[in-house]
Image (cartoon, rainbow, N blue to C red; front, side, top):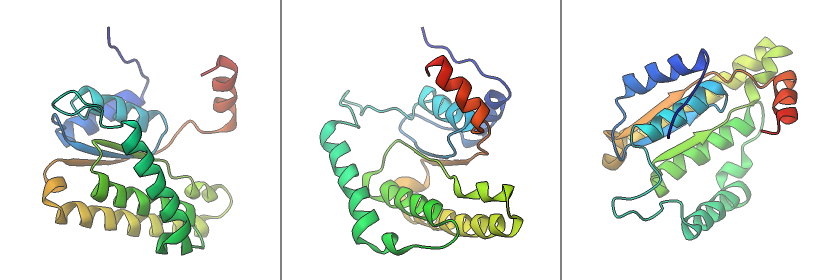
Length: 178
């Protein structure tokens, strides 16, 4: 049996999945790994953004995983991406790599967790700097998707808030063993 339970994050994810009209074989990029993002991932899988090709082969086989891992390491150590610095550099690198992975490897599902905006708790101006930079990088991804005929009509991108990462919730998760 396959089921999914959720609180307020589930209706948000259902609405996003409905609006995106995800179909079998579509590519989906979820930015955010909180309850809403994870619900979006689960619904995308249920709607056909699966991890197997039409002939039943696993898309995420060991050889592909090794190629992706090597690409990420090279991108973080030997490319222009490695030189990104300043406010939000971690998020900018994650978004740059995610966009490149979409173009190169064409995964059916990709998720990116952005954490640099947490500076909002200490500095509104730093938060705005991070959000502007993230917006620029997300714009690059959107442009790349629109320019790629293989991605243009079959890619959904969800940008969702990440709620639930505070230390008390994580402590509960650790105690529960999940």
